[in-house]
Amino acid sequence: MTQGVKIATIGGGSSYTPELMEGFIKRYDELPIREIWLVDIEAGKEKLEIVGAMAQRMWDASPYDVKIHMTLDREEALKDADFVTTQFRVGLLEARIKDERIPAYYGMLGQETNGAGGMFKAFRTVPIILEIVEDMKRLCPDAWLVNFANPSGMVTEAVVRYGKWDKVIGLCNVPVMATMVEPELLGRKPEELIYKFAGLNHFHWHKVTDNHGKDVTMDIVDKMYEGETGLPKNIHDIPFQRELLEQMKMIPCGYHRYYYLEEEMLEHALEEYNSPTGTRAQQVKQTEAELFELYKNPELDYKPEQLQQRGGAYYSDAACETIASIYSNKNTQLVVSTKNNGAVPDLPADCVVEVSAYIGGQGARNVAFGSLPTAERGWLQVMKAMELLTLEAAVTGDYNTALQAFTINPMVRSGKTAKRIMDELFIAHKKHLPNFKETIERLEKEGVEVQDEVAKSLREV
Image (cartoon, rainbow, N blue to C red):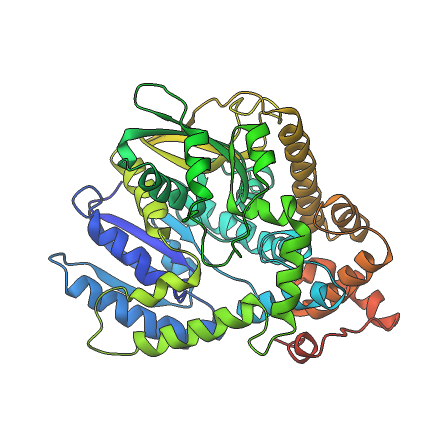
């Protein structure tokens, strides 16, 4: 690598960027950054300029001489980069609003990375990540790609399977939150517990032992019913049915509520849908507007506390620690999306899983978890099949494959209503689904229209 590290961040105008800067500043001694390039698209130019100026203030307030570059030219940013981080959102928050509201109109869950919404986020995101990979092959062939763009596991799978790029790590803040909150429940420090995670992004389970090898998983479960559960801000906190946890003797991730407690989560989602504040995406849009007003303050040179409300808390601990661990060959244990290679024998070795791994100069060395219990194994195999079908549809633009993915997704009740939701989502996201051009033209000729008024008003966005 060159003298000093060059980092390119795709989606640099994100409200999360100050979190990333904070993490890099904290780790400068082991990750000597020379320059950071923040990249965005024309629609994100104003936010890029606001957050970029704030990022520079954060570095200026530190002891380190690091230059922030802002650009709409992705190729300029990628040239000779050592690390590329991706945190972009195709269609911005307006797309997420459509993903949530169109299924909710028909009484189904529409969540950002799960169910119908998650599949359409993949349809929009996968073609772009594959374009980025092709650019990297030309402009920075030795760089590592560190992905935080959701749905993170599917995006990482697309990079490996269709982009043929193995130097990629997919990340999520959910496991980080668990490993930070749960030790407190037991009155322990994080370094006093040993974690093993296995599953898929937003669909994993974990076990915990103490430093002497004693299993303390169920001790944590006991405490979870007394208070803090370590959930991100974007997941409604309904307690899991305790009997399930006692049977599996593992701790599910927060997003499992959409599967184990679908009825309760749907009820809450429909309450939000019908409320004046709207769905989670509409609430986040308001929070983000407030954050950017804060970021405009020329005196602000540190990450504001309000950023914790966005749902991505501890993002920098995942992203920055991964990069520092690769650069300095630290062999830090983290939870990442990476090629399975036998860590979870219930899934093929060449697919991407989310597991505990040691991160060093050669990337992720997975910790073997072993086979999951019967119920969890079944869930996992169905979800991975759904992911692979979703990716195939995203790449080929094949309507029938997309419908098959919808049909086997446990969060989508299959039948005519699911097909109607899918068709409306195609129409709503027309601008960002070029691979499905023929399908969308056919649906328009058939007279398919978006019924939810809010989503309908955003159709051209």
